[in-house]
Length: 149
Image (cartoon, rainbow, N blue to C red; front, side):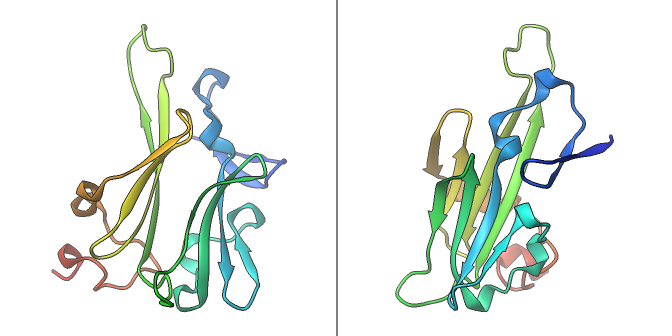
């Protein structure tokens, strides 16, 4: 699969047929650090570059609007932040939307974890996703119990 650069937000997006694009393809994350600086996926930052010990908030932005934001609780940092973008392609000829994209954002190890579905403009808490998460670069090995083994 080839990737193309979306000039509007400088993100690499899959080179899908137009019928496969969903509004989540133009969404991106930004982190606001406690010193006021910003790290943005739209500016080419990678997930592993996030400095969790200085994180003030984590946002998902679509069309210039913050659609989801998580803050540290009780003065703590977002050291335990976990983020995933999950894309699913559904087969069949009677499928109205052949591809779905959701975001998973949460705080390890106990949550809460949220599923953000931009196509349906909703999000909901779902901690059952925790055991399905695999460790990504930049995440501490001890964030989730099943990562320790």
